[in-house]
Image (cartoon, rainbow, N blue to C red; front, top):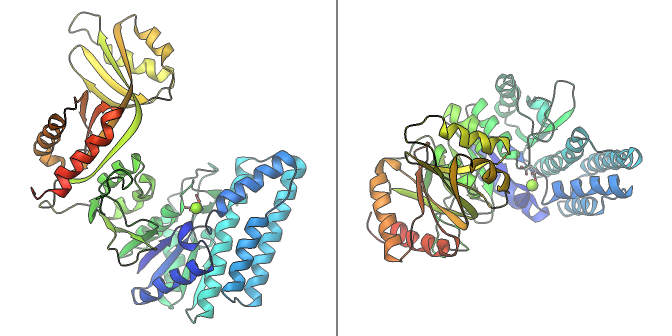
Length: 447
Ligand code: ASP
Ligand code: MG
C-alpha cells in the first residue's frame, strides 16, 4: 500500500483533477490511498467568507460556488454527486448566515467553516474516479479514525488514531476500493470538527502511511522536491535526491518547500519514506525523505539563508568564573517573550540572533546591569544543511569561500541536530555568499 497526497494547487480545477487521477491510475497496482487538500485557494476563500460574515454581515461564497460547480460540469459528474456538493454548499451558507447573525466566529466555528473545502474536494474526486471506472469512496477523516484534542485551528491527533486508522482504511484497500480522504481535519471527543493547522493535509497523509505501515507516502506539490538552494537566488539550484528526516526538518525552518516538521513525526516513528514529487512535472524524480542517508553521498544537502536578523553580543561585566550568567541572560529574554534563534558562547560572552521584528529595548536596559550589550542589525543567517560528520571539511570549504569573496563571518554555530552549520554575515553580503557556496559545493567537481 502507498499513500498519495495532493495539495490545493495540484487539484485547483477540473483539468488538474483529471491530471491527478491520471497519476493515481498509473499507481493502482501499488494499492494507493488518496489524501486531498481543498481545491486551489478554497481554504483562504472560506476564511475570507467567514470574516465578511462576521464584520459586514455578508453571506457570499461566489468564488467557491463557481469553482466547484464549474469543476462538476467540466468533469461531467452525475447528478447525484452534483446534488451532494450543492447540499454541502447550502449548509456552508447556513453556517455563514449564523455567523452573520450572532457576529461571532470562535476558533471552533472557524474550523467547522474551513472543513468544507476538503469535504467538497474529496467528493468531487471520488465521483470522478467512479465515472472513470476506478472504484473509489470519499471519506471524511473522522470516519477513518482521525480523532484529535479540542485545540481548534491547531489540533493534535490522539494516540488511539494509530489503531483506528488502519482498521478503517485497510478493508477498503483490500476490496480494491480507492479511499479518498479529506486532509487537514479531524473530530474531537465532543464530535466537533477540529483542524490540524494550515498545511495540515501533509500530516493526514503521513499519519495514514505510518499507521497503516505503507510502503511509502508520496506528497505531490508544485515544485520538483527540495532544492539545493532558493532558485530565485541561485539559478543552478537543483532538486536534492534524498535527505534525512533531520535535514528536512532543518530546511523546513528556513521556509524550504518541504513538509512541515510536524508532518514528518509519524514517519520518523515508523521509518516510512516520504517522496516529495511535482504534480506539474511528473517525470522529475523528486526528493526522498528517509531515516538515514548513504554515508558516501555528498557532504552538503542544501544551502539556505534567512534575512533581517539582529545579532546581539553580550559580554559579562562580572568576574570570570561566576555562575548563573547564561541563566540570567536567557531568563531575561524569556520574560520579555523574545525568541532567540542561534546562540554561540565563550567564557565571558554570549552572542545570539533574533528576528529583527522583535523589540529588545527593554532587554537591553535590564541586561546592562550585568553585561555590555552590542546590537547589530542588518544581518543574515546562512545555513548549510548536510552531513555534519564531515563538518571539518564543510567548515573549511565554507570559510575558504567567504575568505575568497572577502566576506567576514561574524558568528558560527553548529546545531544540536548535527545536520546544521549556520553562520552570520552582513545581510548585504548574504546572497553573494549563498551563490559562492553553491558553486563550491554543487557546481564544482570536488566531491
Ligand atoms: N487546505 C488547508 C490549507 O490550505 C490544508 C492543506 O492544504 O494542507 O492550509
Ligand atoms: Mg491549501
